[in-house]
Length: 266
Image 1 (tube, rainbow, N blue to C red):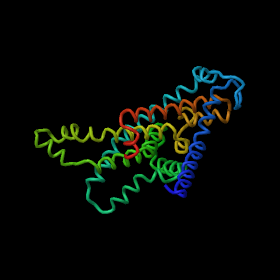
Image 2: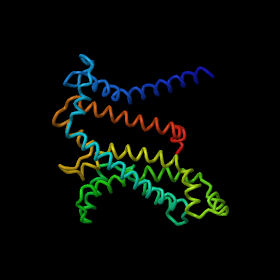
Image 3: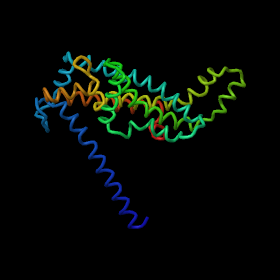
Image 4: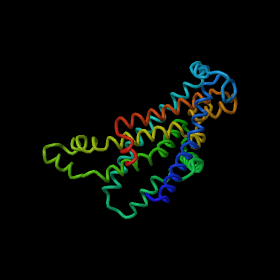
């Protein structure tokens, strides 16, 4: 390795380390503040305490919101998995003009600002006469989670040999059983990966959910914003820390069951 290559490698690693530190510092600060005893956001904390986590346990407003967010994320993820898998199969196996344009259209919610999507869906739901809060939230969250499923399952299907299904049928399996025995196990990593990302995307969504919640039905990000506006204490840092732990747990589970490298490849 020449001197120029060594300098270039050092600069690249230095920039990578600086980027990692820049991205992780807010998370570290949030976690540190959540364990402080001060009633305001202070670092270094005068002493360490679990008072804000204990306050979360006593909160009567938080846990119904958490339960509603988990239910919404789980239901929208299941629907997105079913619809996204069917869309991916149709796009891959179908032979029609404009297929690439359809693929781009289906993943377009990832490319547009959330506020733009939220306003568009709000106007659409009003024009269609949809007023129910839960139905609106579920449809909206399916729209924002569907791209994760379609992209991941489409990539996995492009690597699958569909002649294996025909081979299973020649061995006596019916078409549905061949699908369950051959295709589904091959797509299990894609289902797991896309499902986890879809669940996290639904749990963390704010710019779209804000248009469809009301005083009686709120999601966790909406409730967190209300805490910041009404009582800005480290309780919000404790909630954020738990969400960080949720994301870390999802990555650990994905690594154990699929492997991070394979998740990235999907």
